[in-house]
Length: 181
Image: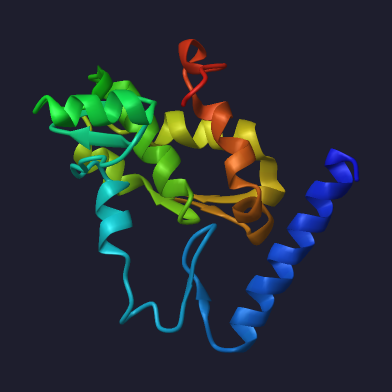
């Protein structure tokens, strides 16, 4: 099966699965989740993490975000176990993102929920981010994958199903083509 045909088949399966969940009374909460009652069910872990909260990565090649620093553990079991045995943290690399990089990271993570509120970025950054992100969103996804309003960018169902394939368009040029372990 070719990649285009394979993608179309997977997209239909996901669309059918979400439609079945909705018929059963569920609500789509992100590109990957559905909940029975969104007013009673939240994903505090995901939501806070995707808004910049700290997370300690545990395990080989695990990512974390601690006190504004993006970290990743070493990428082999041998190095990971040796670090722990020696009483050391098994960190392989660390990077403190700039304000722009943090903004892009949070935008990318939050759009996976299906929508981004502009006021969040205006409240949590040095200045209004909406014009930059809205322009990037329009350029990246066009009208049929996203709906724009003055304070919100919302993906359509088709956009939500394609979100992972859209994210690279928001990366800074120096972050494209990077291989993560």
